[in-house]
Length: 143
Image (cartoon, rainbow, N blue to C red; front, side, top):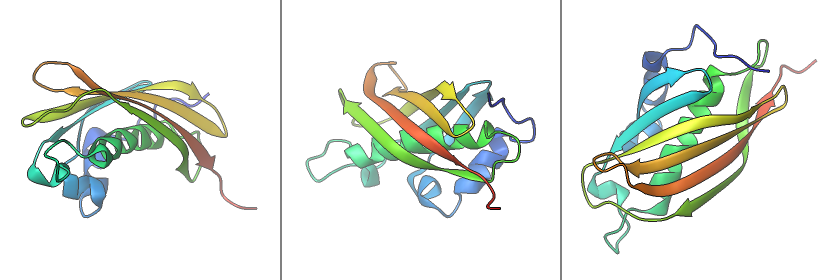
């Protein structure tokens, strides 16, 4: 079973996203613990679809990033990286302003796969706006 890697910090995870999609979207990791990572994303116009609702892709990006960074923090010793091999989301609501929060929790931390669930909510009210699950394939050095 994978354990939280002590050399991985919230600051390091936030630095990883800088010039990539998570940085552009404003995704910020908040708290890292064993089998858990929390994040947030301030809501801006760029997160919306032309119908003035949060774009589903914005919510998926937040949840997938949070689960992905949680995977990095829980990679088994000797593993090289990971990749998402499956994801699913249920969208239950939206927000118009403020920020959304995400809590990712480990459901399975194996040698070849990890399964993470995430709940995305309105940061101000705590109301759930999306449920997310993904499977991560652990990548090992070749040879």
